Structure formats: C-alpha cells, structure tokens
Length: 347
Image (cartoon, rainbow, N blue to C red; front, side, top):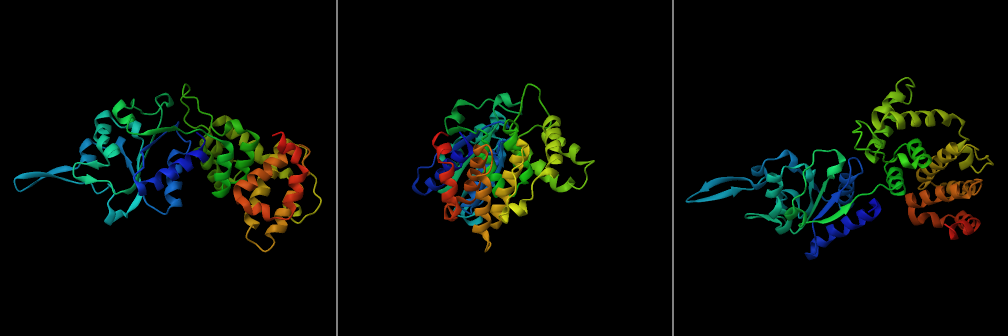
C-alpha cells in the first residue's frame, strides 16, 4: 500500500482507540522506506508521544518485568518504558520497531501485550495505539520468521514506495529541491535495493534525505560533494546526482519567472524537471506573503509554457499536494486548468 494511504490507515487506527475498535498494525517493508517515519508523523499530527520499544535489543524479562516478594506472594515490577497515564499521558503510540529482528523467545513475551493489551497485572491505557514494523525475510536484515500466533495478533500492511507521496513529504519537510527534481527525472532511483548484492549504500527514501543533508554540507566543496553523495545513495546514483546538480548552472532565472517576465523554457528535459521542482519550492515559500497569489499566478503561467504539457501538469500537481486547496483560490488557476483540460481528461 502506498504511504499516503497507510498514513490514513494509521490515523484511523489511532483514533479508533477511543471507541475500543483498535487493531494492532504491523508494517512490513524493506529498509529505508519510511515505516518509522509514518508512525512518527501520525503521532505528531495528534500531538501525542511515541514509546519506541526495540524488542531485538531485549531479554524476555525486560518486557515482562522482574518478580519481587510482597509478603507471602510474588508480584511483578512493571517496566518503566511501558505506557503509563501519569507519566506519559492518556493517549499515544506504543511502537514495536524491528519486531522481526527479535528472537522468538522475546517476541513470545509480547503476545499478551499485543492482543490483550496487558502483561500480567499491567494494562495498556485505552487511548494508546499499538503499531509495529519490521523487515521481510528477503531483505537481508537480521530477521526471524514471525510465529503464526504473533502474526495473527496484527493487521498486516506492506509499505510501497511512491514518488508522488515522497515528493509531497519532501516539499513539506524542506528537502533540497535539487534532490526532488532529480528523482522526478529518475523516478526509478527513489528506491533501488537488490538484496542479492547486499549493498552498503543504496537509494531509498531514507538515504535521499541523507543526500539532502550532504548537499547542504558540501555544496561549497565540489571536490567532496560527489563522494559524499555516493556515500549516501551508492556509487551509481551518487554519480548521477552529482552530474545533475553540476548541470543546474544553466537554469533559467527563477526570480524573473516569479516576477512574471517572459522566460523561455529550457530544452533539456533534466533542466525542465529542475525548474518545475524549484518553482514549487518558490510557491510554498511565497504562499503566506502579501504577493503570494501573484507569484503563484506567474508560476501557473509558466507551467502552461512547457512544450510537453504533462510536465506543466506534474508541476501543478506537486504544487497542489504541497499547498492543498489554496491553489484553487489563485485567479490564474482557472485559466491554467482550462488550457490543459484535454490532457487531464486523457490522463
């Protein structure tokens, strides 16, 4: 399932704790596709804490607690990491990350916690959702086959990579527009992991964020930047991104475009992707300024000048995902939509 849909699933599962309809959710996927990031996004949206428990780093007693004598009886000390209303709040997310990396004897200790929301006398507070994530056995991670009793305690979703969803997240997160433009130009490199070759560095949604950081750190050091990018996303993708960035000095004047001046569209397809991504970034930054609608209107005018109208449609689609319905309030939007009506009908 694509990330945008899974975020909605997780959102509803969190909200369902209020009426007792919550089902623990297991997210499956290869490394770096954003499983943990999605859980964090849902928690942040509802302003609730996430308790991240890595079962792979635990012994069974770490989760069950330790026994102590109380008079003639033995009771169990509840681990402080488990959700507690007084310490953590009435609602939140209990996240069992890397659950498939836990030895079976440890995952067995979590059975009652996941299905019954309790461990002995301890009970998970009603407002807390239970999410888990792990790699598949073919992903070359440290994984164990999930026992059937544990698997049957979850609803299961496989995380797919999706460029539109990643681009929407990237714009919202301030990812360098050069990286977004490059992946629009080379979409197959958003995630390129072959477990048979067991690469050290490879392209993934996570490692493209690392590439963004490398661009911020080494942009003024051209002798270091290519190596830094390859260290993040692997040799092949790193070399391609380096060449792509080096070619961007031929970009048209973006300030002139946002001022409404007549600027020609570059003929090179890679530069067209770069201009489109950069203009979406300009529109996001201009949105809440006094000239925001005028700037976005000029960007819509420019979107209509691309020789391949699908490129302009991609630009405006990314812009809509980034700023939502406020795009429709821009007077120039109606004219742009009418100019591409035939393209949208056949899309």
